[in-house]
Figure 1 (cartoon, rainbow, N blue to C red):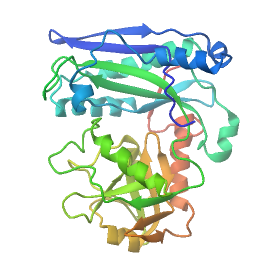
Figure 2: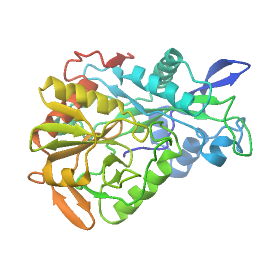
Figure 3: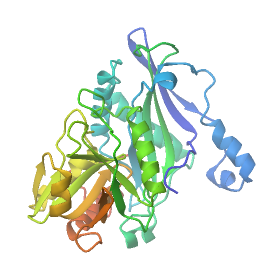
Length: 361
C-alpha cells in the first residue's frame, strides 16, 4: 500500500493573520469506512478526491509557484492493547518550528502543533478512520504493518513574484500508510545528482528539497535499485543521505557511523532514536564525515532511517558501475535488532522505557 492519497475526513487548518494563529477543524465529505470500501471505484475515487480540494485557498502563491513550504511526517500507530499512539511528536514540532523560521515564516507554536496532530487523529478515529492492530504483523517484525501517516505542512498566502510568506497557513492531514519500500529489493546506487549545498536548505524539511530526491530515486528505480544515495556537493566524496532518509554504516571495526549534521543534512527523528538505541547496546556511535571509499571498503552492515523507512537494510551499494555487497548480502544482526526494537516500541509490543510514544487513546 505505502502512501495513499486518501485523506481522512477531518483536517486541521490554521492561518497566521494579524500577528496570531487562528485554527479550525474541518470535516470533509465521507461515509463510514465500511460504506466507502463497498463503493464502486469511480464513486470512491470522486469522494476521496473531494477531501483533497479546498476552494477557499489560493492557487497562485509562493508555495505552488516557487516551492516555498515545509512539512513534517509522523505516524500514529495502532497499539497491541488496542490503543493509538504517536511516535515522538515533540521532536517533529520542534523541527517544524525551526523549518518555518529557516524559511522566514512566522513559526507555528510547538504545543499547538502537537495538539493539532493529536486532535486530528482522534477525530478521525471516532469516525472509524484508523487501522486496527493485527497480531500477524508480529511475524515479520511489523514490516507490513499499517499506521496513520500524519502530514503537517505550511501553505502560503496568495502571491506572485519571488517572495517570502508572511501570512501562511498551517495544515494537518492524515492518510493510511504501510511499508514504504517494496520487499525483495534492498540494493542502492550512488547518484551523481546533488541533493543539498552549503548555505542551502538541506537542514530544513523544505518541500523544494524533494524535487531532486524524487528525480534521483526515479532514475535509481528505473535502473533496478530500491534507493539512491547522495554525495556531498563540494568534494563529491562524502556520503550524506538517501532520497528521503538518513543513512547508517556499521563498520568492520564495530563503529556505527552516520553522517554528521550540518546545513546539508536533515536532523532525522528516527536517526536520533537509532543513535540512542545503539548507545544502549554499547555500540560505538560516531556522527562524522565518511567517504564513499571508506563505506565501500569497511562497511559490514548498512541501513537507511526515517519516519517512512523505519530502519531499512541496504544489502549493496553500486558506485561508478561497481557493486559492493555488505556482509553476507542479507540484513545484519545490528540492523535487525535496531529495526525490531524501534518497531516493537512503536506498536506497543516492547516497553516504551524512553517515553517516546504519546498515547492518544
